[in-house]
Length: 245
Image 1 (cartoon, rainbow, N blue to C red):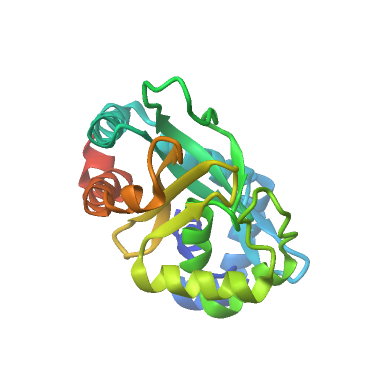
Image 2 (image 1 turned 60 degrees about the vertical axis):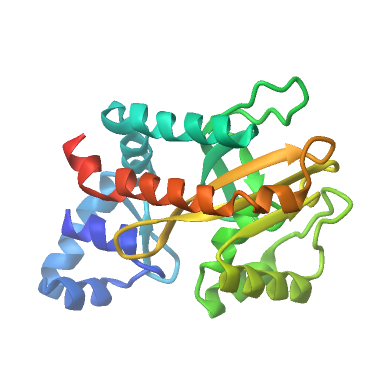
């Protein structure tokens, strides 16, 4: 379990030697334990010999996030936010170079973007995705950017790597991300980080709306409400309530 925890929290994939030193486990034992975890599907070993989460570890994380122990409270927070703002609010979690919609509460307006839970969206042109990329260490972030397809989704999609890096640095500084018709023409959005107890981004809280109904500046005006809700959600994901229910 200590190995699983260390791998899940590592900013970059560790090597067996890294884990042995960090966890004070003898090298022969760490290799034996890693082989067992790999056979059981909890970790994967890359071609470079580094350790990354496996399918079962992702499954455990997804199950905990969807646990009924705190899903009612999480939904109540999102519903209150949607009621206050009058627009769709939701939570997205990073997965590779995409963001996954893991929970959302829709507004009652007939005109809205309908992305179901489990939908995947590109990281470089959504508020949540850019927020996640901005949170990564510089070297890792720039390496990811250099391999992104940077496809043009909408009129304002950023398709230049250097321009995207400049945008991500600005987001990192202001701690709020925006989508100014970058993913879907006619839709704007913004997002704030949901942080764990180590002050690391574990998910993103977002809102979006058609520009016919709200401007980007209007959505940004709700930033204080968004940040307060993100703090509450962070305690559910990583705090005492996540354990105690």
